[in-house]
Amino acid sequence: MSGLMTAMTAVLCIAMLVAALVAIRVLGDKSLPIAILAAGLVSLLASVLFLILASPDVAMTEAAIGSGLSTFLFFFVLARIRSWEKGEREYDGEKHD
Amino acid sequence: MTDTPLGILGGLLLVAGATFLLLGGLGLVRMPDLFNRIQAGTKATTLGTLLTLAGTACLQPAWGIKLLLIGMFILFTNPVSSQVLARAAHRMGIEKSPQTVVDRLAEDTGENS
Amino acid sequence: MVELLIYAAATLVGMAFLLALYRFFKGPSAADRVVAFDVLTIISISGIVFIALAEGRGIYLDVALVYGLLSFLGVIVVARYLERGL
Image 1: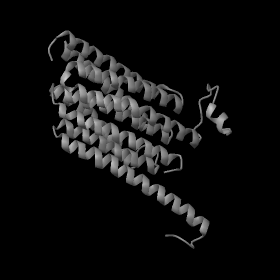
Image 2 (image 1 turned 60 degrees about the horizontal axis):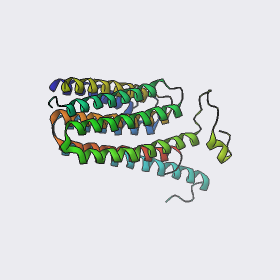
Image 3 (image 1 turned 30 degrees about the horizontal axis):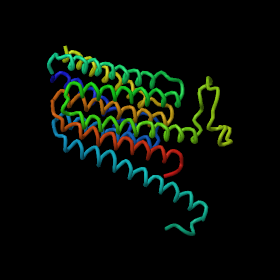
């Protein structure tokens, strides 16, 4: 069944190209959360590509670190920055720790 | 992958599940607003994935436990993520399609969005 | 016969993947793209099951389990971020 693998690789390459162009904010709307989500999508599709290349342990690590942990970390930091900016505007620069 | 009756049944279940996945994707493109897209995208793809896992279990019976685990996991987590996403969209104030006739969540919380 | 059915099912799954990718590329709002991300990961779980079936190796299904867990957590985190929470 190598024809199925070849077709799946072609579809995955198209999808990763589109997701990477969204992630570097060339296509789509230019908002930051969408770019982070698209970067997570690139990681998820790369793990399927590693699975086609017959390495399930690398695929599992890529899915866990690249998609799960880094997406979560980016959104956590974005939420902290947003609340910090809001607090600074209220306190007028007195207190930012 | 021999042509036993169980294998034929597994192949037919695979095709049925893939058809439901295709219908979910088509609904994701064709539906008019976000809430309809959440319904079409989540429920049809949940059924499609469960049918695909059942067909794989018919084709390779030794993988049954692991496939059952994946199926239970999808069956439990997928409606939760759909509900959380719909609530977030409702609080963001996404505009609804003009055919919407009732909005129970806005009536309950007293908003007018 | 069974091989033909598997090929037909994989073709249908690939078409569904491309349709969801179109919605991810061209969603009007951010929540539309999150829905498309969810559907793309669920379709990818089916794709991983097809890869495991074609290669005949049951160890690949572990990746599908990790994949489902992480897509669930990712959608929850993004939804909480979008409704001004976290």
